Length: 265
Image (cartoon, rainbow, N blue to C red; front, top):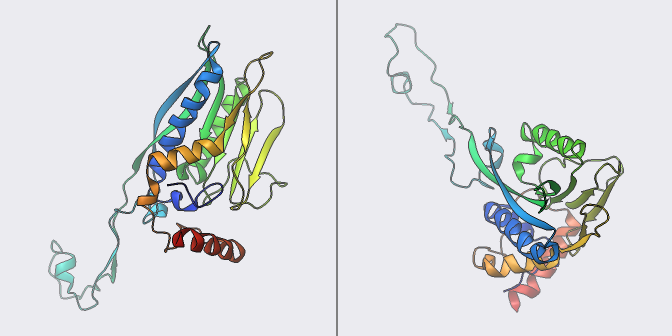
């Protein structure tokens, strides 16, 4: 079954995101490979980063992390501190106990386009994840962007997540939930596709080495294919609101109208 949204589906931004991220990378490679051969190949680059602040994603990306427990005020100090030395001074029990969050390993995938003659990296396609859009991962990702630019690599960034800070923020960037950016090697310019919730995903150019022409990446087909192949509709309850952040009032009204037709059909 196809997605009810013309472009990015905000319901995919929660606990399904890890699967969506991997599926997008694989489908992009599959679509690009016949357009690139024989001079280029598309390879998946898999790397693991630590999400050192997973508490911001509890209930969204990490739904099964332990929740905090509030103790009862009447609980005695001996139960909270069983190894404490007896004293005539009464210890005030802590009214709140919180779990100590441990870093979560996050598997990320990017698509690397390399020339087949020397295996040199030509173009990198990054699919942003929550860990790339908040500290400390945000600074680390921005450093990676700079390294790619200095190495003469074209960079395509797909930001299909509403939460977090966009790594390619710019004063002239409109306030939109989604955006796609293309930074061509040594161009000093960034091509941007700002996307509203109501917009279809664009067909974007994938630059190669001069004088080879760009090849098209058909993102609408990529998203439609993975939604159907993974049967995401079976995991989504469209009667509930999408994952945070909360949509604007206008977007909420538009979405409710859209989904009312979808659910009734």
